[in-house]
Image (cartoon, rainbow, N blue to C red):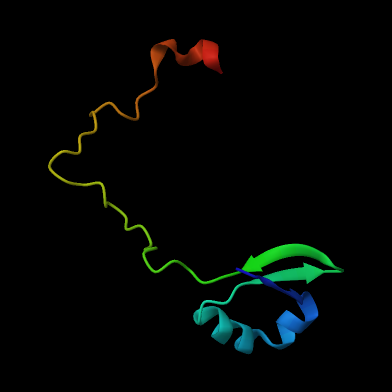
Length: 77
């Protein structure tokens, strides 16, 4: 797959158009003075933000003393 390069000024002035193209699957390298500095690409469809507490279920266990200091940890500081 060929990835087009676009200068940072052109990307800034045409961002809306770039986003429309990215939504259709196109990818771009954004360059600054000819050097690639960023990649603009679609977000994978299966990417979902993590929810707080998503590990809570009947198999999840955390010890009551989880946040207590560890006595023999001092040598590792």
